[in-house]
Image (tube, rainbow, N blue to C red; front, side, top):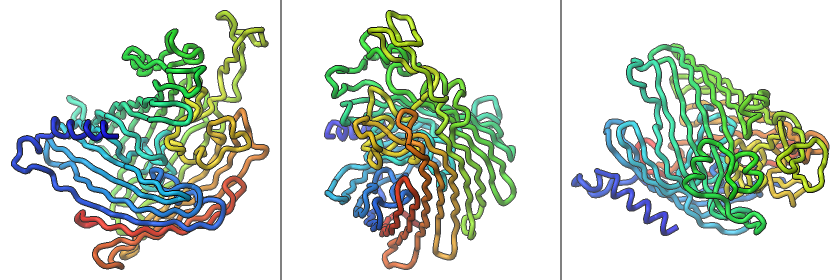
Length: 488
């Protein structure tokens, strides 16, 4: 941790003209402080009270927390600027836990940002407020420390007169240690292209590529994973590992890879904005060839331009991860030849299906961080559910079909958000549930301004679950939030 803090301070000094040149020695931060608690009846905290909260609230019932943060903001006017943020959290759920949730510096150089540290982020083309969460990165887990170079906003491509715009980025991150792998790394790159310019209709396409790689397995039979500069390029281009890699990485690709194609259409009308979006998911070549075409996140939204209406936004999403390119076929590899029947001394190889989303044979914690799935929370986090096979050590429910609705608006000084999700849970291809288990989850959330003195905002949320999977839960969440930011 101290090495990370030193790196942040060094980069802050090197990249920040505001610090080294201007007479103003340091950019004055705004502060915020929040305290809150959840009280629940049932086995768990209700699903939408703890999901997509950056790991703040644990699924087991009854949580308390307090967090304190300092942050500055990037200027919309300055071509070169910097900002930073710091947030420490102390929470209690069965035991007390004090941790650094966010710590970052960010340097703006014209349209490019250089970012170092851990910061709360979401990725994908979904609605930012009412969605069930991005398919591959939803804000369900705690922030992962990274070094990133990004173009955060759509930027016109030269000679296109603004009709074609792009944004994107590349990151290197650190997963740290888990039960199964120490010091593994994150690779992420993405690119979005948007067409439309000044027209009222915009179309966009985005591509995300994530990978877990490097590290050292806690299984001595696996040992240290390849992590050289040459191995980085194999990960970057999703190529198979060399002779120093595990056999499965030699047969497939080096590391645990995930990706998504994002499509979106937006229509700007006089008073509203409407649109549709679609996120695919792939973890191997079958997914890249759209053999799992039925899987993905499909959404439709409506937003009003005025934000003080009784209904400001509506979202409907259909989420399906049940196909997974089919159950797959088992082959047997012996001396470089594949057989359809067992051969003495051969190795089982899965091919053409059973994509087994968010799981991996070597990175057994899968696409999770601190026990929570990084992608959609509807694929169940290991911190919540281990199924009837806890010895399998991976996500035990990644085949779901869900319908999700979101609504938000304002009434005088009350803002509200309503979420309702109905989803069917099937387990995994290898360990299916005996019967599909239906679940209903509901959230009603409100923030109230001007009720309490000193500019303190009161937040009240009510959550309910009903069904066979998480069980029947009811809960209340109360937060008190104070910020020095103007208008907050």
